[in-house]
Length: 462
Image (cartoon, rainbow, N blue to C red; front, side, top):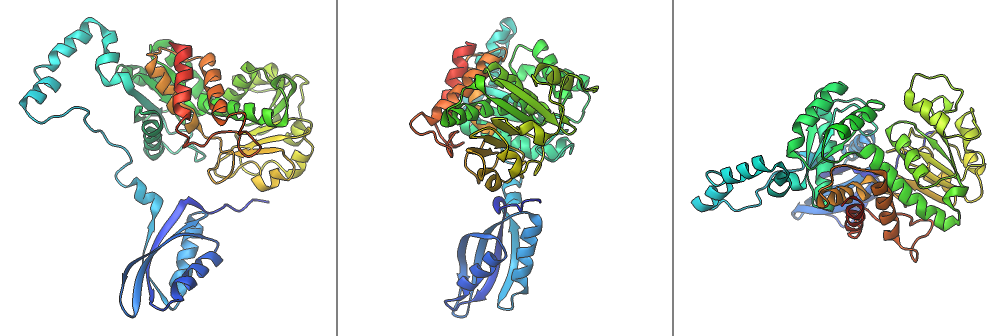
């Protein structure tokens, strides 16, 4: 059975409507909205007289259809007069979410002469004589390109570069907010691997790092590998490495809570694309006992027939007992389930068959592989990718601090040791005295996380 979505701010609406000025009108309005399944978050009076008042009602709904349903119910009420309905998420995106602002004053001729011509020519020549000075004298010192081809955007699929822009803008805003890194969307109108590699390589002189984003597997693996070979700046695919870092951090603390060691546990990981593959690789580096990789057709194993080279490698490199069945059989006896796949594919009865004190990370968004409520009936620890649930596994815990550390170290590459250090820093931000079943990762708004990650990465990469 498909679990109903919970109301969230992502589908928040503000309805301006007129209603009678009697004392019970506002209460009736809130009751109607609540009965419709929405959550009232604000009710503001914007105008009134002796007989009528105009209010802005803000409420969270579960999706676009639910928002329309709530609006229709309000419009049908005889004592409410709906004037306007605003989708708050679309309002946030009007005109984009980021901008460029000068860091130096441009007040007079002297300022202009130093920031631009003629003074700028001296700086240009200094860089021409010593190209490494670009890291010191230009935005390269603190700038990252957020590169996508729009082929695997969130859970939306291949929607193209223009439609990917709001996500990349949001990523850039998060870079600035949490890491003080200046990032800029680079949305490419091509999905040809050679073209992407050549374009990004040609753009690289402007940037101190490349953050690949929402590029479909398996092309993303080749693109990253080739760019790392060609460029002298770090290339980091956040869907792979950012996800893997935060999962490792969360699992580190989860195992502390249930009293298990990495070497003694078996994980079933469903979803063998970019994120799943990177998670498996990093958990292996951390010393996990065994992993059963699972995708659409069941467990990956050494005897499977496939043209997917990544799947072949996973099937032979992991799954020690060569299990070849379905997901339900794979999770039986496993200590850990990690899902980066599709909604509602795991049942409570499956979790009940896992090892003692099972750990469930159901990370599909917005709808996880299993309802958190259902999973919690059997699991010792449950984590999701949702902000409205405990233990949110969110890449924003990793990438701002990772790039802050890489830029500060003037790093020319990225490696697994830095990933392990970043994961440890995130896990340690919770602290042994605070960690518990509902607090295995810090809040994305914890101001200590990005500096801790940056320091750990810088230490490894300097």
